[in-house]
Length: 190
Image 1 (cartoon, rainbow, N blue to C red):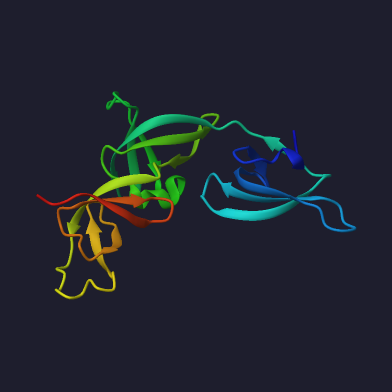
Image 2 (image 1 turned 120 degrees about the vertical axis):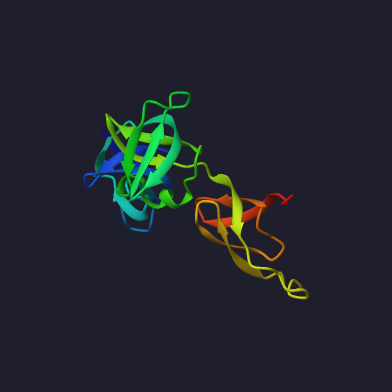
């Protein structure tokens, strides 16, 4: 069992029946009050981050989350197919409710990690930075770039993204999957 002082960054535990991972924690001691551990924690099933204060009389069940590398093949009607690296015949299908927000960032041959508690897959972890090809981009008008504005483009996986005006169809851009924002152009169209 974990005490409130064991809730440090990276620790996984069960809270109200759900698996959580500590994202950040601060020890607070206010005048004339008992000490409190203020914890930012991420739900490992749905990805939501919440903040809670825990007191010294509380204890938590520590859980072990296993990670296994997988490769995304394709998605169809809310079902997503993966396989272990080098073994495309051994397929695993997950639904959108297991994958959560990460589903919109998937593309063929993307390496991900399955997060498991026992035999149950509770979610996937996508790399923070992923490169995507730009499928559609509106033309840029001359004189429109002085203010460093943005335009909306469509990526190879169908995701709409705000990018700078100089990005064109055929370019490859890098995207932050945690924030959903454009980072940089990796490759210019040929």
